[in-house]
Length: 617
Image 1 (cartoon, rainbow, N blue to C red):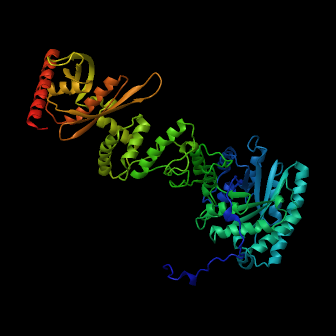
Image 2 (image 1 turned 45 degrees about the vertical axis):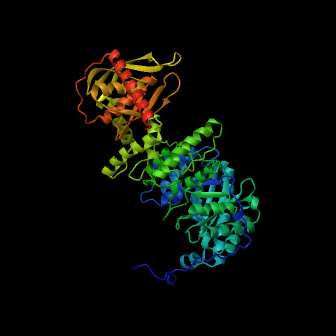
Image 3 (image 1 turned 120 degrees about the vertical axis):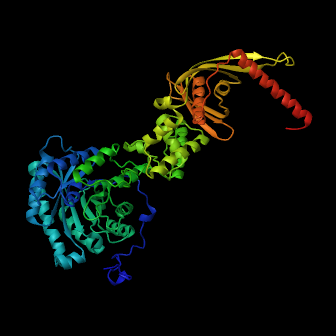
């Protein structure tokens, strides 16, 4: 059957039972964390195709305690011996339940099941008895065929039983009891009627400010937009009475995909407590996700009073206990949520990290980062996965990875050059390029570390000498500064002596390569920076050379800055000469090299004089 062209013939628009024209929640902000209740082991567990074993539930319980959850709905103990025995275990096992953690159990409004629930929590330090009955017209008319009066009577009589048993068990075991009542299907219930039935329940329970009664107002099925839920919550908070003795609790489901928004607006409307599951497990589309709610607060500088600094272990525990994977795009926890593939995003993040580091050096540690609402390190994630590379990625992201892994800050023009290398690899594979692939390609392209023996030219040893010379017409206070390079270069693996002169170490090396190998190259740009700190600092050098038609980049790393620059020259020259056939090396003496260089200078002077005389440039 196809979708209807006019769905109004089948579905009615949700219409709230109240109109709150003077609502105040839109003008409020959340400035503190709510009381958290995890219902993973009850609502979450009952929705699993294969419910958790006692061992799995125990592991989950330990995780919740470690996270800092202070109220945990352990089970529906009257439903099965497994659930009953689990509740007994969290009470009787030494060290499993801290004294400040409330053990909550769920029961419907049935006398036999209420009694069984009390038996399950006997001896607990703190216990919450959570009783519910459905209150909406749909359930009153269709499921239970009860009137409003019948529904109130059901809640009243069974609350009286809960009160009686709580007094008895408290006197016998010293347990501190709290009572939670849920008008199930609250959002589909007339809000005025929900207030009425809760007022009756409250009058019987007689709460105190020290141990308030909990009214759980669930979006059992999410039927409206979050703002309508907020209106219902604000109306309830205004009219319930004795507000200081009441904790208003939210239990949003996610049928419309807006459970988080409903929970946040509900808090603005006055709610004190939120019930949900870690990563949002639950019936149908799930309960509201406690991780997202907590981390949303954290990202706004508000402590959620929950500790997710080892998010990966939380993911492992939840996935293994429930059999449900965490979606790779799940907020804060998914594998890809801190990952950028887009080139423009990567470039912005790279610049953001650089700016963040500069601010931190000046004492400003406020996080302000493009595309990253929180620092991944705060939840135990590394920066390595922030930028990943595919065919859509840009030079900034690739350069960021090289800097993070190797500590090498590539010049901008070199970023463009290496980006083109990676793009060729990505286009050939059509898939994501791993960090290891990028780093290995970088090392191989520029003949670094284990790939150094694959370059056609490699530095073995060298020495540099300074010479000063002057012509007959040179003033006494002027001089020419010449650097002489002498060294052994591995040429296709064979060690050969190379000598050359120039106005610096790199030009002297290139002069030697030209004289002895026929490599006609010139330096276009050179940059360097330090890698590391303290006693072990290395120089990283980047050289751009040209053969007159094409540019080549080279990289060198060495504790000695001069050696680093020379290695970078040979790295670039190896690429430029990749297909060259080298002549046999003919050693040239230092004197001849200086003589040849001087002759070249004279010729350049003659050319300059002739150009001036002839009026040419």
